[in-house]
Every structure is written in C-alpha cells, then in structure tokens.
Image (cartoon, rainbow, N blue to C red; front, side, top):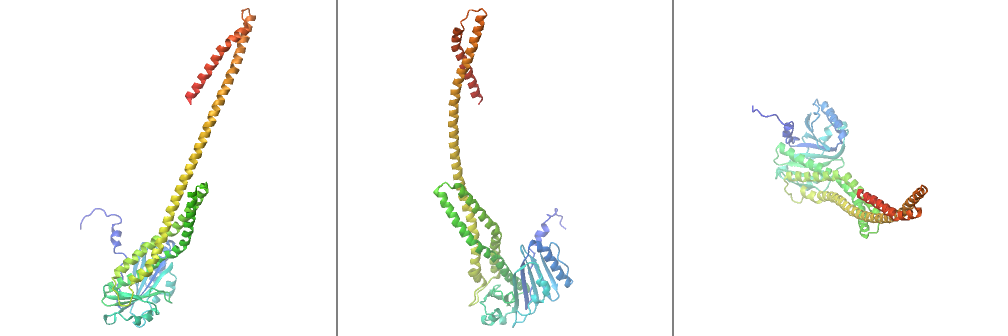
Length: 428
C-alpha cells in the first residue's frame, strides 16, 4: 500500500461529490412518478424523520444525518430521494406499464397515500413518466398519443441521438401531475434512467426558475413609479430652486424603497438565472432530433420559457440600474448641498471677520479713552504728591509739576499699553 501524507479533512467527501445522486437504472416497461417540494430549513429534520418512517415500514434503515440522497427498495418499488439547496425530489419507480393506459395506476399511487400527502414542504412539481418499448422501432403517430395528454399540444423529439422518443405537454392535468411518455428504441437501463431523470429535472428547474416571475410582475409597477418619481426629482435638482434639503430627503426615501425591492427579490432572481441555465444544460444533454410536425423541447422553451426568464432578468437589471441612478442623483444633490453650505460658511466667516474688525476698532477707541482715564488719575496722583511735598517744605508748584508730568506720563502709558498689545498678539 502506498504510504501517503495525511489526507485533507474533506478529501473523501469531495472525491465522492462527483458520484453523488447517481441515475437510477430503469427497465422497459416502467412507470415513474416524481415530486419536487420546496422545503424550508426548519423542515429538514421533519423531512428526514418522515422519510425514515416510510423506510421503517419496509424494514429499511433510516438515512444518515448528513445524507443528501438515498436509494431504497420498497417491495416492488424503487425509491430515490435527493435533497437540493431549497427543494427535495422524490422519484418512485414501478415495473411494468400498460401501453393502452400508460398513466393509469401510476408509481406514485402505490406509495402509502397518508405518507405522500404528509410530506413536509410545498409541492412545486408532480409528474408521471411512462417508459414503453417503441412500436416497431418507430415513433408513434401524434394522433394516437394525443388522447393520453387530454388533447393538448404535444412537444416531443427523438432523444439520445435516436435511441428513444420523448413526448410531453408541460401541463398540469386533473390529477395535479404533468405527463411524460418515453419510448425505448435502444436504451440500456442506465441510459433510460438518465434520460427520464433529465426530463424530470427540466420540469423541476423550469418551475423553480419561474417562481421569480410573479415577483417580477409585482415589482414592475413599483419600478415604473420609482422611475417617474426619480425623473421628477432630477428635474428639481436641475432647477436649483433652493429645495435641496427636501429633495435629498425624498431621494433617501426612494433609495430605501429600491433597496427594499432588491432585498426582497434578488435571491429569487439569482435563483431564476441559475435554474434557467440548468434547464438549458439538461435540454442539451437530451441530444434532441426533430420529429416531423412537432416542436422540440428546446424550441418550446425558447418560445415560452426563455421570454419569462428574460422578463425576470430585465426587472432585476432595472432594479440595479435604479439603485445606481438614485445613488448618482443623491451624490449630485449632496455635492450641491455641500457647496451651498460651504458658501454659507464662507459668508458666515466673512461676517465674523467684519465683526472682529469692528470689535478691534471699538477696542482701539476704548483703548484711547483708557489712556486718557489712566493719565487723568496718574496726573492727579502726581499733583497730590507735589502738594504734599510743598506742605512739607519743598518749594514746588503743584500745578506746574502736574502739567509737566502730563506728556511724560502719557508717553509711558502709551508705551505700556502698546507693549502689552504686542505681547497678546504674539501669543495669539
């Protein structure tokens, strides 16, 4: 045995991923029923328990806690269960079929009725398929099989490059199920199983993709209203009528409405794109060849399914475009509001500058008055001092001394005040 380094923790599970959900071999003739249900995350445990109860009736082990698919024999029936991202699929296979009544006594009817009805989830697809040998190796006449589909328009083609024929009408019949009729020209059991599984998956992925269509239809009038409102707001921005704050508030409301629409729909629109790609992939895997007078499945989808998907993609793109346009308008208006506020700030600063200059002039005026007041008191003090000295015997004339002190004291006061002002200016 080759000695290898330690395995990556997920090596085995990743290696087995390509082998997950294998096709079930189907012998000719057989009847098959398929049910796909949308299952919420909180219903997953109930789904597993419900499946385990069915298996217990036939002495089969319950599925593993981490299993995403299962194959089990239920007496003469074969059951296949697959769990996908948001839905689960159940395929039941019963041997034998009546060519005259291929959709009587279907495989699904042989399951316990109480168990099937109580499956957790909501049914998205229910379909019956019957595999029959091709009469004389040739496709049956459309007129012969039309009554089996209730007289509806039939879609069909040779599949697998001519080793079989497939017919359906993509309609839900009175029993709540759609119908598929497959004729075996040269299938082996695994090839037959693959082809029928692809037909079931086309129906399932088609329906899952179209779950976005009602959302698109609901969003379209809302988008039109938002586009009109945005056009009016854009005109208001162009007019420059001084309503910037009001317009910005309205744009914010529109942006919230667009983002709400995106949040409510983008998961479904993204799923629509992914499922529609799977539908196209499964159709290509059928390798259809046209039969005279019939639309192929690919043509049918191109005429009816593809436009519906296009509608969903268009609505999704319009929502994204609206989001971008609202963001651009908001940015433009916010810039204009910012410029207006900056202009107001400049005017306020200019006004403050004018007031500061006025205060400076007032201060200088007060300073001049202060010089006179200080000088008055200082000269008075000198006069009192001179009178005191004269009374003490010093021969001085108080009025003369006071008069001589005026220019000296005035110059000193001015010098002190200017020095103080220069110091304050230097500190600021």
